[in-house]
Image (cartoon, one colour):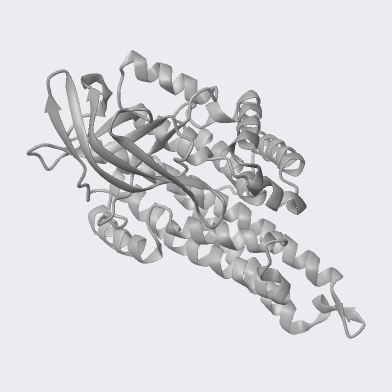
Length: 372
């Protein structure tokens, strides 16, 4: 595999770094978190003007995958709060499963930033298992009626539409439904996670939707969902890699400038060894991310094995790197005023997104048996 970035990848990386340096200076992190959705909406409009939102659903090529990974590394380096993975990668991939004209229009609105959407995935008893769905869809005259609870909707606090997986009545098959946030019977509980992202919980009490709101029919919903979530996982892995690189750079800068006993603490051999361990984990994660990206379009068992292997290992590397970086800063490293503490919080949430390391090790084993 050629790890040398193309000219287009370098241009994307430069663009996102210029945006991040201007919109997300490390010293302004607490103000950005306190600013709320209004400030994020302004940044989202600028991202749409830069063409980033359309990039998430532009063409199904391996080259486009590498462009997205370059973009997401920049998101990680600057700890951007905008829910790019959910709105521009995950949901559009789900909407692609239907050829309905209305959904094509919705995808276009997402690409231009006019509409926000999220996937209502997690359920109280499901853990990380995508096939464990207890929400029920009852077919009725002219449409469907949904009842159930979604305990964690990533970046769903400001969404105007929700993609809801549900089992059709009397069937074990999963279908996907599109539900507007103002639907009667839908209750939205908004909250912030430790990394500052805005999530939601949903309760659906006999939520009536039209028959055209089914975007993936029973028997097709699970496979569509798995493929879209795998794509989102790889994007989050690239984000984690960018965050690791930024945290490592911050720690190295601190070792060069912090002085003790009359010398920079970076001259202490034991701390140099720890930086070597950090760099080793970053490069290990980089290789795993590139490998997973290259397998996005492989047959399902091969794709699952590669992505689960990467998810398990990159999560471990990300937590190791950011914990070490926080510790290298000493006691002040855990304070909210230092950016390294925010990188650690983001890595903790990325570790849990769509399955932790233990869950993906099991999935890797199962997928490897099928791919053999």
